[in-house]
Image (tube, rainbow, N blue to C red):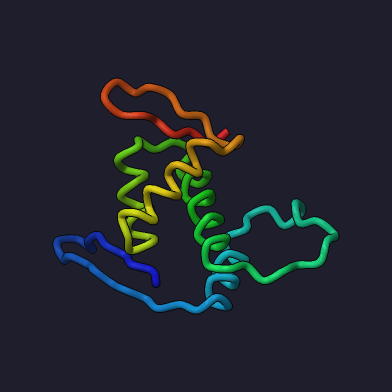
Length: 112
């Protein structure tokens, strides 16, 4: 399930999409920016956790830098769950591709 919350102009948006593993795999494939990084290894189908991980990585990579609360809000919207959003945030914190610095009151997540 994918939950999107936000607004379009003054209109609030709260949309929930139900997706199966094949849908997540297609979404993850669409979000891969650099096709030259694809290895010659056979492509396996992504499970939902792997697809969410790819989307979370792509979210931060595209933004370049986000504060912890902003990133958590987006991850919670992506997963539809506070607990799942926090798990992705912790996983990003420990990723070799992410640098976390002290931004005063909040951590700043930067894609390397």
